[in-house]
Amino acid sequence: MDKVGHFSLDGRLFYIYEVPLKVFEKAEEIGAEGDIARFAELLEVHYKDHRETAFYAKLLGMRPRNLNGIIKMTFGKRVYGVVMDRMMMEAEFLLLETDMALKLVAYELGFSELSYFSTYFKRVSGMSPGEYREKKRAGA
Image (tube, rainbow, N blue to C red; front, side, top):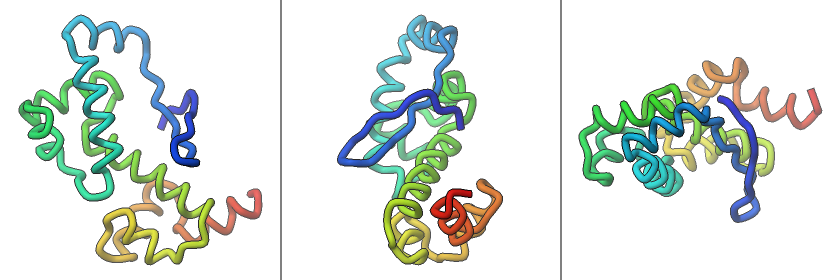
C-alpha cells in the first residue's frame, strides 16, 4: 500500500494513496476524477459490509468492468484490492488503538469468523492479528 500523507476524520488516522500525476491526468482526460471521488466516498461508507465490485458499480451507475478499469488505472489494483486495503487499514487501527477482542475486530470488519480474518490478516501482514498488536505496541 503506497502512503504519502494522512488525514484525520473522527479522531482516526487514514492514509491516502499515492496517485501518480500521469494517472491523475489520464483520469481527468477521460472524465474519471468524479467517479474516483464518488467511489472513495462510497468506500468509506460500505467497505466493512461490501467488497464486491458489482455493489459499487451499481451505486455509481456503471458496469463492474468499467469501474475496475478506472480504479486499476488510478490505484494499480482492482476494486476488491482497494476495498481490502481500506479494510486492512481499519484492522491495523483497531488492533493498535483499541483493546477490542480479536473476535470483535473481525466482526466489526465484516468477517463472520475470527479464523477468516486471522488468515487474511496473516497473509497480508505476515503475522497474526494478535502478534501484530503485541509487536507494534511493544515498538518492534
